[in-house]
Length: 414
Image 1 (cartoon, rainbow, N blue to C red):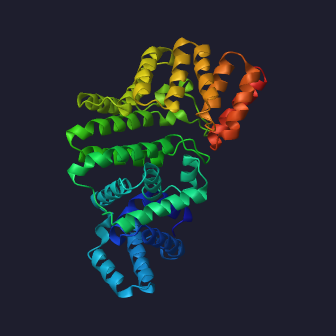
Image 2 (cartoon, rainbow, N blue to C red; image 1 turned 45 degrees about the vertical axis):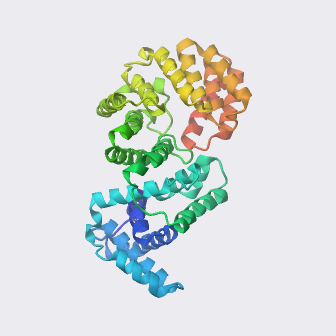
Image 3 (tube, rainbow, N blue to C red; image 1 turned 180 degrees about the vertical axis):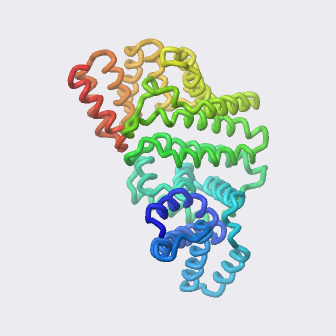
């Protein structure tokens, strides 16, 4: 008997590994996705009755293969496509369970999704959909666009890859530099979606964070030393952030801010690994945004208590980051660091400047950060207004519960 929850778990955890294999074999995103859905539907119907097969992942791939062949046979180009499929699928066996094959397929698909013929936003959307298993609705929320628009964007990207004949392979070393920047950006955005989920009832999606870290490790091993510096820095950044995952979420699923986290829950081994990765990246010459952000994360992990945090150095690192990445998100984070280093009023003035510019309109962390500083300054009525604004913008249930609790506090004058 296979409980439906077990099949759901297999779907969530293995789709990002199975789908790249099917896409490589079938050469068609849509056909692979449809076949995968049919295979899981077959599992829902058969496994409770017949029992879970010994190799569930291989069973899904084999079933999807048969479903794909059936679909092609029903199509117009019966003979040609069937022959191609059967040739491509020849030799497929239970060895599909072997990790290296799966890893290669994922890497091939990652570099295929990040082909320079696709716009950057299409690269990320396609990767989140096919490699990370996010729904179109979740991706649409992350990009602040309507779901139908995101669905069209993904379909156009799939069609462009098919029509342009983009090969499903890791490019030659001479082509790696061109695509690696997009690959790193995509992996890190994937991690960010797991680190701070844009929607749903969970603040952290550990499975997504771990998938991004795993892909980051593979990419680091692939690259030459000259390209490995920034990749190692990005991996260090993800590992350092991930080391705090158990302290960021309260037992009831609520958000725990950095200065209130139980630091004994931080994973010391991962903090040490992240620091070693950062040291290696710096020795290779990494000086970009990933390295600077990793250095900030490392400083947080080194502090035994919130009071021991070297906020002055963190502000200095944000200055460097802002010089090479002048984004409003970085400016917001810097303002929060300034508030800790130089006082809430100094940080609030910078956040007010950002709010007045309108560049982060609709971004819930702007009013949330502003509300927190107003609360610290005892300006409770203004803080309540800012918390209400943040609540109107957030889509994550855990963040919503945190903001509601703070709104109650400031409404009571605390």
